[in-house]
Length: 421
Image (tube, rainbow, N blue to C red; front, side, top):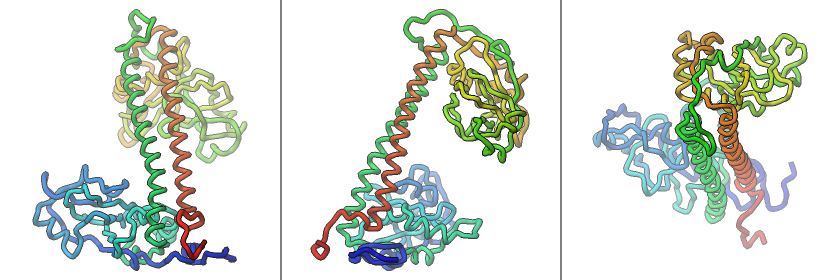
């Protein structure tokens, strides 16, 4: 393969000629955890294992703690984590890596992690962390795990991971650029969390009548769901049939994973032949999951408000309201008070089920239709704002992935060196 001038072909692909490349162990020491069965106590020294290395910095918030005696045993042989080190998971979540910072209290490594320590103070911790999050390492991990049902890497395999190494100033420049994008992502995550909290508060206030929107008064009416509309049952659509055509379909499992309160898009598409034996949905239907893993989640629902042709799969219970705002019901029938009623009517242990007759007896307290619509509009607007923020976050994530591909292979350079100009 032809390599453009100024680049060389290596085991990690084409990289600039003045970059080094080799096994991780050339640049960073890799030290296994001490295989000691520690005693855990309520107050002591934190122990970081796999769970504690799932974020940018080691998270000791819920870490187990051990005594001073076992702490000293665990840090023997240069195993005391120090600022600038990285803690790497080598089991189950292999490749997850988190930084040790100045603000961490003294802690020890637990089982199934190892310690990465730079051999030169010039190397950038943030740069190597970015490499471990990139296809450079992820592809090597995938090759390592081929044919394995249990994800695990030993220290020698980790030492042999091929990594590109620019000169330290370029390492730091790359790390800074990627850190800036991480800052954007962190800001978006905080905005999304704040907006979700706002939605939960609005639902708690508006869907219970604790707070009334301007212009609405009067008591809410108590009804059973059988008084709200009529119930129907979806018919079976197998997983294999969900890619058989172009007609939209909602399957019960998607009510847990895809549809929150309102059906806004589709994952399953069936053929006219499959649709001929399925139940066609009408605009305004409320779809309940008739099966679930636990009674606590049974009956999760979403409102179908689209005017397109769509069908219900099996294990979906359909409520077709007579005179209610379906979007309001989609939100309201997932609230905690209704969920408790659905849970109490669920049947089964290994798999929970709820029938249309059981759902029909659920008691609800609802306002008149105009107030339902007004509440639905408020919650829909919040969801629309959330969707915009989530789209921005996904675009920013995609931007970071593109930047990693460019920067960590030297396709795009942030620093020019005299011999290259």
